[in-house]
Image 1 (cartoon, rainbow, N blue to C red):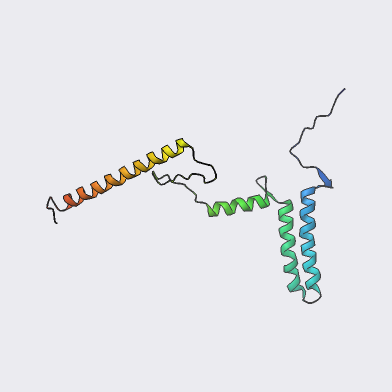
Image 2 (cartoon, rainbow, N blue to C red):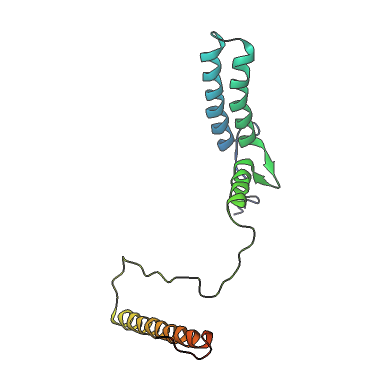
Length: 148
């Protein structure tokens, strides 16, 4: 017995003509919004007022439903552009700038407590070395003369 094996499983199914279900829903919601704006403004205002107010949501709906840039949907393309504007273009590495954060949700084991003690000891040693370095720097800056 032979079975048909689907060839293009990445392609969305067409529901109405060339429209997929997602495009149909986007067009229905956006068209409904544009129609609501038209109905609520067309009787009270002239065409120069209600036409732009109706056309803007309709054009945004068409762009979201049908426009693809570099084989990426319009909304994803816009979100990627916003992310590109927010995030820095280059990331620089600076040694010693990162801080280690431990989760509050997980209980600490004995091993974690030991490593915490070791880290605190290392920090205390580093502070002591900095203090010693500061006192040596003061002596060198005063050219060996100790002012009390």
